[in-house]
Picture 1 (cartoon, one colour):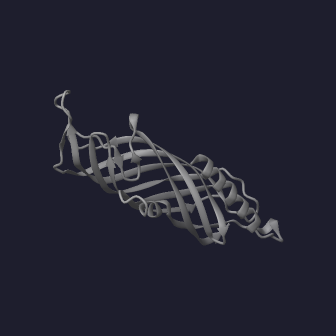
Picture 2 (spheres, one colour):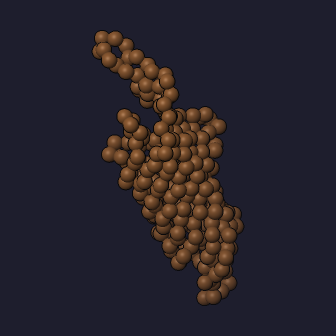
Picture 3 (tube, one colour):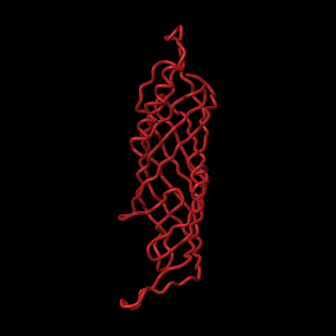
Length: 226
């Protein structure tokens, strides 16, 4: 996956370099400021091949200075997870808000972004334990309990470090990729069950950390120049 993502980054930057037009008067050029809105295209495509996972994520950022952006992602996610001794279904919504810094110094006329960012994430969701196994006697096979139990009104909060890129491939249209390292702040767990999957956070691992990524396509709505 890492090798594949690096190849995408090199390819997108190559396209962007060749697609930039020359500016006659560099001294009077003004940067564009505006709202960039898009979607994560990975989730809808992945759900075509895995019926156990479905979701949609909207992404947006607004440029507030030459290299800083206010950014947000929000959407919903549902997933059925199979573990060794239990199977459960998660369904809920999430929102993330934060800021991005552009670590890439563009040529005049370019608007590409190497993203270094931080997010606060919040999710509300339900968990349904579809079945679980009880191993009451070590000399007998585990007994499977198949009575679904639903826990609603759950929530979680976390922070995430964002690393990624956004490259303008056609005028006002950007393709992007980002990787997120997540750390849980708090989580309201069901009785006798730990939240192992949280919408927006994805799988929760040991020490309440995790990771996620997205592939996005977005459109820049220019508002003004300065």
